[in-house]
Length: 215
Image (tube, rainbow, N blue to C red; front, top):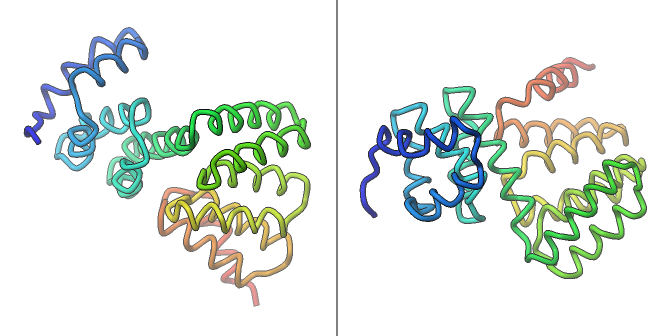
């Protein structure tokens, strides 16, 4: 792999960022920068390059990029953390097959409209199409949680983290379910795992300290 100059990389994408031309940026990235090059920039000394690399992977990254992006959740620069978190969610949502991705997209629209049963149907279809699509299970877990079906939500969270161990969203969601079921030990375990992956989940830090201080 050709060594990447971080300054040249930032300068090459700057016009697209300046004019908020995401379509042009995607085309530029695909034409000039490999995913391996973008991932290598996540670990360079140039903070702006790390930020832009994470943003770029949100647009063009794939499942093979997830582990290195998860590492950047612990970057000393808070903006890099935010960009890495955004990239992870973006990749998680498109990491299934195209038909399964479509079902999850439709399911999240239904969920946002509070059409819970319709959302569940879409997420179930996504899982039928692509049984290894972690985000389909996670979205179904979120829907079950909102319906107060906590045991069902926990089952889907467990499947999510089996398929995607660094999915801090599913770990924290599982913790929320255990909290509602008055299972403090399991709640603490899940919250600790979520924070181990993503230390910047501020509300979990506060909740965890409260749980630990309880008699």
